[in-house]
Image 1 (cartoon, one colour):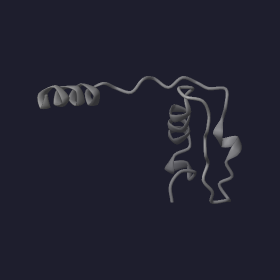
Image 2 (cartoon, one colour; image 1 turned 90 degrees about the vertical axis):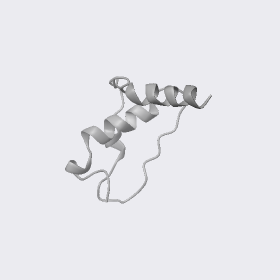
Image 3 (cartoon, one colour; image 1 turned 45 degrees about the horizontal axis):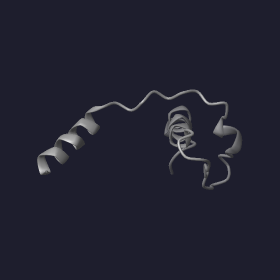
Image 4 (cartoon, helix red, strand yellow; image 1 turned 30 degrees about the vertical axis):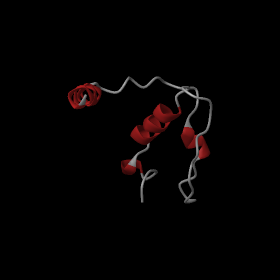
Length: 69
């Protein structure tokens, strides 16, 4: 049983993330870098919330000064 779980975890870690699909929303329109606040994304299951945030972080990450301290 341990070996099966280990194989499943190794397989899961070795697979790349699915590609990010472009969404019709740009979270930067809801974000004011002058106000330190938390941006919360809510919605139904499996509609792309996580990948929308990942896309936002890749576009406007630390180098742009929008994500992180």
